[in-house]
Length: 333
Image (spheres, rainbow, N blue to C red):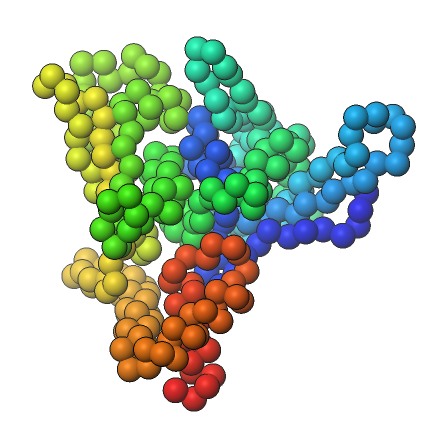
């Protein structure tokens, strides 16, 4: 095996970003919230080991792809902000066990079905404080295929850690998968939208098709309203809202709207930590607006330079702008 690994971890402005193909974000699967957070952290820590084959055993394969994630149990607990208690390690162990057999469907129609297990092997070793998971090679390639097809979801690992329910985690990754529509296709400057039919939501979240039959109000509350409110409570990058799509007096789907706000409103119910985080973000935004307004020519040049320095081929606008501010500060402006 090639000893050189190719890490996928990207860190900018103290924000660790999980990047995955939209085929993963829009896949069909269900798991516990802890298991989903574990998947996200494995993607963040993934290392790709391509193995060149010189043997004649594999006549039609030149390279075997290995995708491995390895980190300490305590690191995962601390980084994802998992509540510490007497059952914390048992909770993480159950998530590892769950992922050893969990499946994601990337296609499921009357004509075609395609599904993969997330991982080919899973190790939980409390004595050595170790979690080690090997992605199914097809999933590993799918996670990283955004590099070729430029269809990706970029998610803040901190936000993933703070979200507690599975449905809210799914809406967050779905919203991130449509980010490239922001300000395009008729959307406003800081806004993007995507529709989902009720049946699509049930399929993607693996909710039984007969669940909530004749109980649409319960479906809206439990599967849409509450999860969206949870996303909005912890997510600082954008806010989500929804509107019902009605046909013949029947709710058949929802249109979700995601909006980025330049300045975050500090609420009376915010904790001191939330207030501090919002103040930091708002100060960064004020700095960006200051340089844009006072040094417009230098700003445009700094943005061009920042884009050349981007670690990812897309980089979110806020990351590029933050890097441009650092460039201008370094010039003494």
